[in-house]
Length: 117
Ligand SMILES: Nc1ncnc2c1ncn2[C@@H]1O[C@H](COP(=O)(O)OP(=O)(O)OP(=O)(O)O)[C@@H](O)[C@H]1O
Image 1: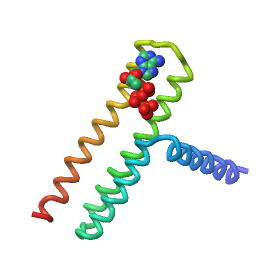
Image 2 (image 1 turned 180 degrees about the vertical axis):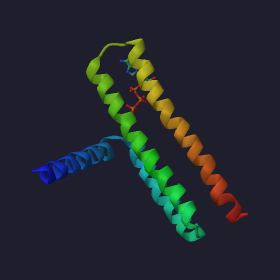
Image 3 (image 1 turned 135 degrees about the vertical axis):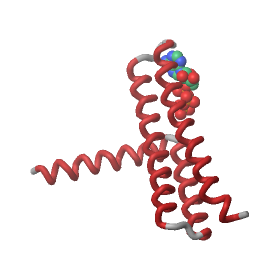
Image 4 (image 1 turned 90 degrees about the vertical axis):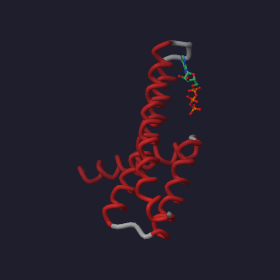
């Protein structure tokens, strides 16, 4: 019974990812970026610890973008009117994505640049 519930939750999570991929252009952009970065990592030849960091950043970025999309939907469900709190919630969630994306780009440059120049 518990195993069935576990697999059901897994299926719902997969459905959430599928809907996000279908409806959210930002998620598709992050997935495409993840593929390009992974190929670059493979061609460049990263160490085990560098792969660990890159995979953590890619996973974190996509997970955060999923949470951002979920927050947008919850806010839209809560109100269809223009509300300062709705704007703050959406903009803060978008800000979280921007902070993580900026940190990821900087870490990516620290890992890749010395190997290329
Ligand atoms: N109910 C609302 N009240 C006030 N401001 C809102 C509301 N809904 C969205 N906004 C603001 O309007 C701007 C655009 O938001 P919107 O959700 O339409 O697009 P987005 O943030 O570009 O995301 P996406 O394109 O992925 O839907 C943002 O600054 C957001 O905070």
